[in-house]
Each structure stands twice: as structure tokens, then as C-alpha cells.
Length: 87
Image (tube, rainbow, N blue to C red; front, side):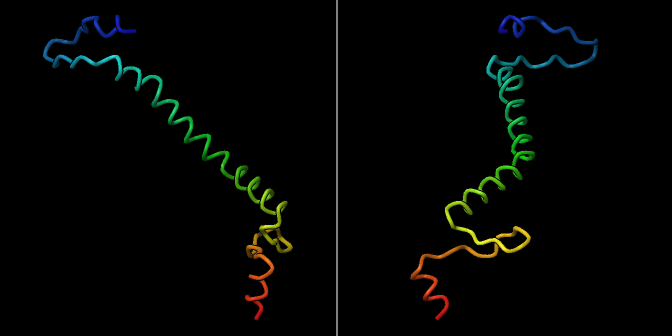
């Protein structure tokens, strides 16, 4: 890969010569940036599934009380908290 950096670039007459780039810059441009963009796209499309799974886990351990349409209304409090809240 570093051999490509060392090749002289030909430009049209009158155009400015490009600045040389480092191997680290090429690595970032061809590997790290695409992986980062891919991670953002995956996060956008998987977020609803992750949120639903989190709600299922919270419901399984009794942290969330759901109303009829499946929307979390309130966090379940410990017994002493519920007694204080109703008083």
C-alpha cells in the first residue's frame, strides 16, 4: 500500500501538484471512515430493535408497567417507594 503513495502523480499542465499523503491517512480514508459510517448506519436501523429488547428485559424483571397499548407508563418502584407515593 505504501508503494502507491510513492508513485508520482501526473496532473494536467497548469494544475497544482497534489500534496503527498501518508500511509496513516490512506488507512483512515479506506478503512476507518467506512467502518465508522457503517456503524452509524447499523445503529440507526437497529435502534428500534435494541429499544424493544430493552423494554422486554425491563418488563421481565418488573421494572416497567405497561398499559394496554404496550407503552411504558411508569417505572415500578420498590414496595416502600410505592407506599410513599400513594400516601
